[in-house]
Image 1 (cartoon, rainbow over the protein chains, first blue to last red):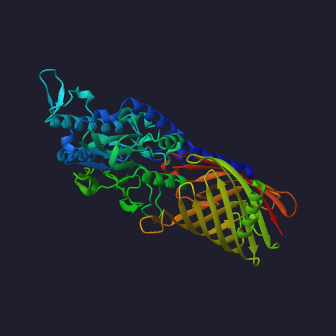
Image 2 (image 1 turned 120 degrees about the vertical axis):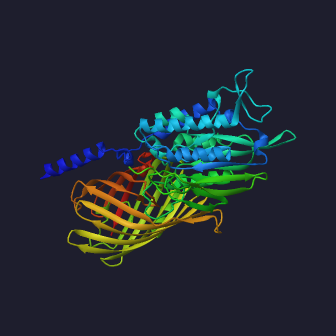
Length: 338
Length: 241
């Protein structure tokens, strides 16, 4: 009798340990991995060398009278690139300064990342075509209408698309695929918005790696050391995180931060004097003000999770004075029926 | 001075405290005879945000009748700078296979390190059988920082509270060892971050028991990327009369 129970238990344990599909990794429910530590160390080292700020091509004149950026979340790309292409098109048509994604951009499979990479490459082509002109003098690309623009090679132009990493991006060892495209999951940069008498004022953009549901020790230490605090005088600070802070509804089958970490982050957002904190993860729209910080959790823009057309994107409009208005942006793409 | 502080804390805790939620469930099952239980434990561990931590907790339970009980718990954790106190009461319903314990609990936590006050309200039902125990309940958590005013507090939607434990021996044995999975601990309730670990107890004398736990508390369980967040151990002593 005892042997029977032991056999059943062993069978169940083996089944659980070996079950996996594209979206589920049962081992990951209980095992305490340290992947976030490795990701953050790699990301930080990458970012120290490859500062995105240096590659951001814009002129103060373009932003000092106001600018906008577009945010989307949880596209869960598989073989259909319709929604991510639509996001890029909307951003390019509106001349948004930045496009930002809140994670779970693709489900982890090489072919899905190929779809994503091709969509980004295509969008970059349109971006360069729209905003740059080729100099016949040195065969470099120069930003249009910028007298002091730096000449760049095509590969050196940064398509202004900035994601944070999500849990579905990296289950089944997807970090290699994600980092191959985006490099860093933990970074910050500034957008210069005002300059007078040699003094500069910036808007600050902070990207956290919260894919694992925790920042991890390394990231906590780096945050406490102030590596994301920036150097400038800031007018607005925008923070981007995949994992959300606030639970939009009862029985949400997703993990948010453990208690101490949620309180640590809320305190940190306050310390950063954050204007808006953007989150994804739970596929459920939520907006609230806590501690004088505006929190937005975005719905999924994936054609599978949100098959009907809807307002899945958010555009942040920052005016000359730094005041902010938000627009929910409609997406029309509907996946073809099989 | 330190000795005096600990003595005072332990005494104060014992008088405000109750039933150690985390004490080994078969061990805490009421035997229908004693009226009072006092327990205390020391804990230590490491947390991603706060690094090393340690502390003391104490409980007192009064069995008003063989079915009804009331009590409370208190703890102080260094490192996390966390102070907690709760009161609770319950009704035990004997059934054919064990008992069902219906409990209600109100808990206050002060996370001094982050400046957060937290109130939790839990109701749960725990089925305790000879080898297995299962708990289901609901918890409402409210927290606030800075001030009590609007915009500085948040009440979470009710959280499902669940726990499962299994023992290697019948619960009437003088010592036992078991596994547990749950989304709560003595002084916190989580959402879908699932704790698990090993628990044990051993009878020292008729009225004295030792108990302990090794607790793994990952983050991101439902993100399927469960990550190292906290590990802790507890070692406690319980006296009943």
